[in-house]
Length: 483
Image (cartoon, rainbow, N blue to C red):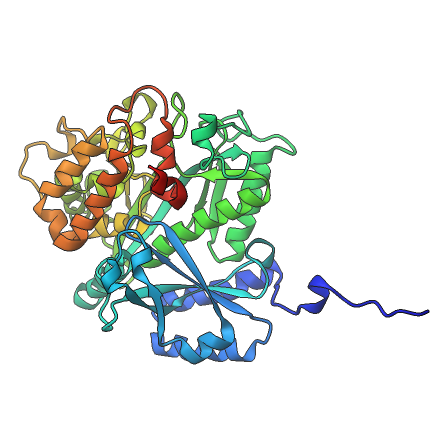
């Protein structure tokens, strides 16, 4: 008796799965449109037409971040989204720090400029990624959407002064053995390295090197325009650098960078961790934040005759951040664990100073030229909300008040060494109220204090289970509710 084989699985599907070179071409074009400030209505028309005409796309993954910086993702069926893209709602009361239950409905508005084609072997076939802006039910920008606040700052600065705000981040992380090693830390009490070679180390078949290579390939395909990648100083530590971007796009890329690292690590049976100090006794992970301001294509931080070739405009920017460094510390170092990293024994940038050479300074002035001159804010943890980091740095640098303190740039002052001192400075500051508004400021501080209160007050000499278990990026709703 003859039988006809029935195709199953992938044979029945015809979802979009593009080669990496084609993905890179599409993403670089979208990136150029964003840099050129193509009007959103034109981008919306183009994207909607593309989605309608491309039958192999099944869904759009919409990304947004909560108040603490956790990335959230919603998949909308493409056919539904084409009909309802201007009326996307979600339950804000289920997002920590957003809205109370009685005011639960929030809206998502698609940011058509932040549109990414993702590799099918990492994110699944037939999907497009796009970032969303969060609005209240009445159509006003939602105050807890820090991405929206950063976007407003960038747009207002450009409209009012012609300023383009630019940023690039050097994001360090650790690669540990096993999937979900952070979520199991309260059971094991330790992280296991996959590599102990250290800075720039590489051997054939090395799992850390393979991980870095794969992440770098995915980043290139998504238009990151990589610069360099390598193992970092600590065992199992990595850093993958990419080029400058407009400030909101740069913050989006931080979220994508961490998402890509976690996706790749999980597929390889490992965990990519962005805890600032997951292992005591070795260097922690930072997120050095390089920033500059340009106008009409001219870098306003560059002056060949300036001190360290940084312009007077640039030094005023630096002085304001040094003056208000303690006030904004919680926005740059937002977890209990991040204060382990501010340890002077491991090149910790915990001094409220500016220097071209001293890596213990909060701000470093790297060697630059007319194109690349910038300042580097070093006391930023990789688990901080990237939109909040950019908002704090740029708004403070542009609009904050500079102290008249003599020798401000080399004064003997230090950042807080624990989250409670940082919380106290944040709550007492008039400047942070201007940055976030009283309501959002209180909600953010309350979230940080709730997490801190679940952890031992003294950091001590080893990483405690609670500072991992109740960490906002490792957030486990089940374990949190068991407390």
